[in-house]
Length: 254
Length: 282
Image (cartoon, rainbow over all chains, first blue to last red; front, side, top):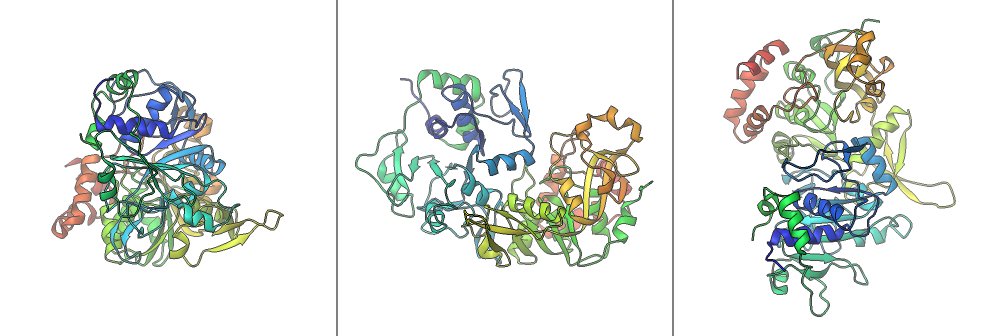
């Protein structure tokens, strides 16, 4: 196996998040989410629908950052109106960012501090409340720290497992926080009460490092595995096809 | 009917305290010449309803706004709208922050003359905590499921910008997305559409396919020809976003002196024509 970077480990972890998704719309927000989703489509999930970042569904898989790729083949139209229809229908998996996230996967992208007069106004709720109740949602955190992984988020934009459970079985039946991928590891909610669990650490990262940088107690089952390493074929796709200009490495160093 | 009018005539019709819906999305195809005309007016205490971009930031910075109803406010290539952030962080505007889909549902309810539409979006999130006016509704059928009853976002006025229009108010978008401009028009009492170019009705289909004629004349009360009217937001295929100008605008949020200069140079002008001239002279 060849040497690989942390960003490449993240790309694999992100791609794995979409394994089994089949023929649904994938909305990856951020460079590495875009790279990971495209890697999944080029390898084990060829039926995924991906946009060009605007309003076209592109059948071909394009490199990120405007690098030269195949002549794009547009297969459908996906203006925002259709994206929302897709959300309501459930045939979508989004990977959003999170300024804060707690142990149950409640996510904040709205503001830091008091809502009436925030210390920092962020993006706003965006689609997080609706996304999380309608279809699978994952999160990408490029800089894992106790500032992001917090005991309590200031504002709940994306709904986590404790709040979904409080809504009852029927209202929460489409709720799924699939995974959180950070620059340090992969996290899921496969515990009896859906608390966040450390699913794997990326190569070169220790469990202690993850624990130290997390502001709440993570579930840890025995020996934590290492995130799957990229195959030589995947590395070639990442370096030569999807990200020849190294946009992933700009998001995650090392 | 010839519905051609001017920015000044449209804004003269508006009153302080009105609820104004603004089409487009983020820093994309915003009716900026109409926004600039509001900046030149005495209007204040406005409620803005917008998939927000620099329309919201500029009007907040100029002290025109009491309340903003939004799902996000962003400049796209600059993810956070810096002037809107200042307004929020100094608590100078009231915020009604919604999920983007709830926002659509609110417009759609108003467009359908319904008091509300049910949606799952918002349940379990802090949208409900910070907007105690939002109520839940129970399905009357066997499922008995509870939903957010998203109230109609009724607008006094809608302002939108299209690529082409005819003088009777048929509007045409030629870019990749029509956003929610049709819903803004349907949700409003008075509807004004600026456009890059007014063409003869018979020439509309030479500009783009049948499917680009998203706005029909029942949805519009006034048409304004405003070439460059969406500047500095993008208006493809006519022009892209003026990123240099947007950066300059964004930087003024951190520096009151720079804002004063920017305002004097680009906003405290007598007309849209002078604005366009000042932009060309950059």
